[in-house]
Length: 155
Image 1: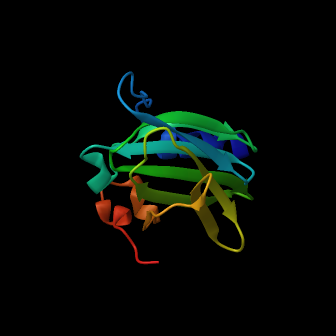
Image 2 (image 1 turned 135 degrees about the vertical axis):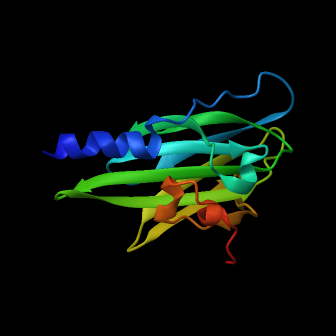
């Protein structure tokens, strides 16, 4: 039964996104995505005009149970990194969403972590510690064309 419920949810949350294409030239930085949660985690990057609406994210990866991945980012360009975790619980699913906007600097290495401590917690760090970023509101309306979920929120 769980598998039957999970397949439509996977299609809804990440199965339709186009794959992310890393930059082939120009200055870049690297980001590692480190989910510290069980279940399936979808990793997206929003860039260009999509930074404003977050309706056309490119899928970097679909990770399972602690897998990690990394991607090259264009440096000097505002982006939104987004991770969405799903875990089957009974007949439903528990989700954890995190989205962060920042401008990657050339040659830097970033780590985006996602966890849970009663609520979703996340951070983006480099070798010097947490970076300056704008957290984005992430709500269930993110699965529709409603872009209100993508608005910056105050810390």
